[in-house]
Image (cartoon, rainbow, N blue to C red; front, side, top):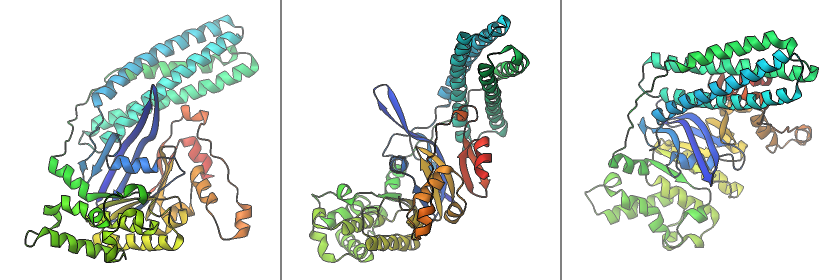
Length: 457
């Protein structure tokens, strides 16, 4: 199957004064033609932000490819990333040299000094933050290069840089354990050999990293005016709240027909009058969504919630899109109306070969409706698998919590359910950065190697 949408290293940030909040952090996934993909997560996790980012309704960093065309304007600036790596490597080297001097002084004194240990810990944390920052920059490069025509030697070089950074973090983790042990025993001299060994290894790697870091040049792909125009037709969205997304000053006929009026050449024939064709297509789509013809003269505030949502779907589907985002399209509706809306989406999917990105809270509906499920937590994709696989074998603790918190019919199961709070701010994350790992075929989890071992048990 061919990929219709590819999202690579997508970042959405909001700034308020000097503060920057990452709503989405390095999102990566693919959607195939005709696929129904579900996006689940708690409120505020970044589901709607992801939908808006894909449609270019939010400023984004990273790459979004629709039918192999780069559609967002904010392409990664390779020169800027390389410059940041150079600068941070210098800072890291300087920070490490300070750390070495303090270690040498502590060991040479041969007396445990609480003041020096505190100083070591402070410098150690500063050094660690710089290493993690460089690691994130290399991940940016790797995620981008995967989809660009660049020689395998250059990609191998970047991967080797990343591996070196991981080796530094591993040595840093060992040093942290030694320091904790020294603080308990009030003696650092006994651990001199282990400290020297790890410090020497970090020194060697830092010298290697500074050499031969190439600045790559990649041209920025720009969409033509006609391509940008066609994107508006091919990518459609059904918003969460139809009351806010429908213009109350326009009649239902004008709301549904507005899109066709703007794309007459693409959607209509030149043989007969446009007005007749537009009216005919509006009547046809009304029948498809089971709405009477008499509502055409009404306004949005004169309709029920279910009718408004049907109008929203009709407005999107009449454009004959290739990709449709349903953002909480059924969350505010009654149970019976939900079933009707889902049946409508399934019907249009078969008739138009639609690809649907379905955002929802209700896990039972997502399991029934979607082929693949993506779980988002605090702007990160934490797990991605087929619907059946995810429900049978959830690995990430947050996914397990989501499934455990879903309402069940069986009273005994409800009483025996245990929901443990997932702590994302684990200190060990600094030493072993989390990455996407394929635990089984097409089942991906965001974790480091220590977490994977623990969760698989």
